[in-house]
Length: 151
Image 1 (cartoon, one colour):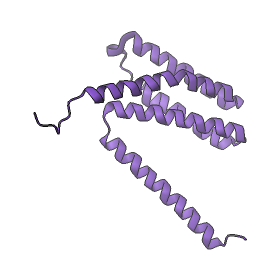
Image 2 (cartoon, one colour):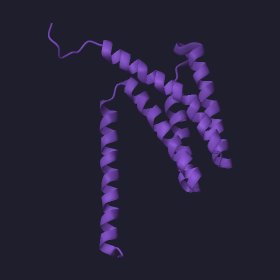
Image 3 (cartoon, one colour):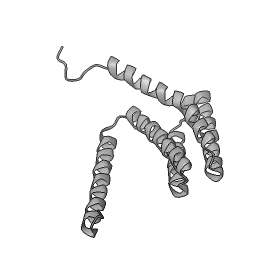
Image 4 (cartoon, one colour):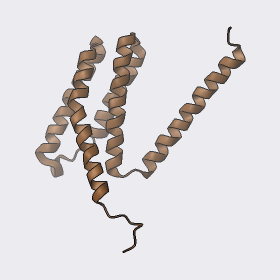
């Protein structure tokens, strides 16, 4: 059985609607997020982009690979690295900046060479930072006073 043009158009419209719904959800999360939550979202988006890049490399989809790696690099450069305060963060901020620069370089090479192992390396390097950041958030939110509680 073949899909009629009407059915295809409906499926396309459903995908577009789902995409818009997801975009609105992300935008409302951003509007209400704490600075810590914003960085957590950057880490999540970065890891998601790397997973997409690996899948695209496996399937031979060069366009999707380039888009996913480009998204990961933008998150690193425009989000995580741009948010570093070297003056306040000292050597830790400098070390993170160096790590982000290295990961950006490796991702650029991975894109040029279709190198899934390099993308996996970047995931392994960034995973402990992501996990630590999420753990800090869980600790901070569990120890923070609840403003709705009465004393």
